[in-house]
Length: 458
Figure 1: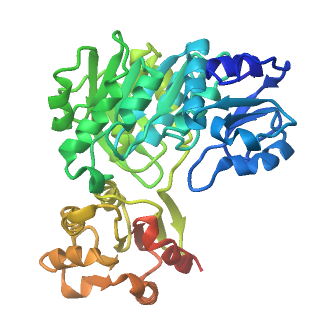
Figure 2: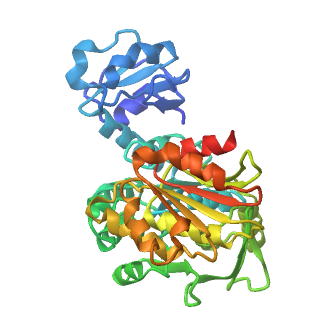
Figure 3: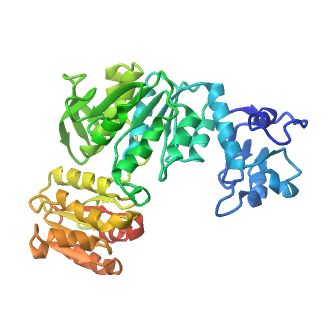
């Protein structure tokens, strides 16, 4: 980004846009004064804290101008250009949209209950074989993060890949209309945020908002294995393309093989090729199929796209294999969990070869609302005593799963601990592990299974 203060003031329709502005170049934006670098525009947002109070920190770190809420005008700094606006967040969004139209890249928007960050990274990797690409940093995927992503584009950006998250109706509608995507992608519909929506049907309705800003000549790419999306796509007038494991999809995957380090599969559009991704789990095949289908939509050469998929580096891969103190293999995924993600990881874990036992340690999944116990119990479908020999459960909702597993597993194979019982879980687990075993740790961050991981690594 490179704009002069005068241009920014006009773009956001500043209350003081007509004043004389100095010739100051702005090279970026920041809403966190601690992360701001020299030459950037400071954007004080009002949330739990009022960002206006951190202006001196921003100036010390090199801010060359600032947006400023008009109702805070009395406290505005006098030693740098101040752009007065009614609402600094709305002004940030206006500026992001203005800069998007100025650079005029193609826009790929990505959402989904799971897999959107991985899919976004894969798409960016594929498209980068032919285009100059900017992508969402980390998971900057909300009403703040999306305009920040837009404003991070270099002037030569040809495609911007924008991840979009949501937990309430209306959020994707707003973000989609903000960026007006050329391609909109939905990875899948799960139970994430079901506390707010109540049903998967409503989650699907909310995810479909991503097409509200889709250009008339745009393309809607979605998981064709999901009936909820198939039903809702019937009214979409733009071009539609699907991915999934069912042979009826535009891009259909098959012959999936997985190991700790990689997953391979075939695809109907290139039947003679074996495609490899550097991640475990059949669930990541759908993410790769989505990215390859976006690449095909942009006419990326198949060989280049497949090479990019094979070597891409994920922004966020919280599922990682580690080695415990006794030599056991640990599959750690301790920072987030929901029923769909947990089932996918359990299925992948069950498929990885081992010479020892497989042991699953599962912590509570949070923000599931009134359906929490039922959804915890549903994990039983992915727990088979012939594949996962023992299960350790931690948290108040996991007792529901323990009750269901009592009918599938020997009594000695199910170990339940209330939330406060985690120290005893650690003691018992360490005693049960042998060097050839594989251990899965999966739970929401609030249950703190990272403590279990730390204990196993000592």
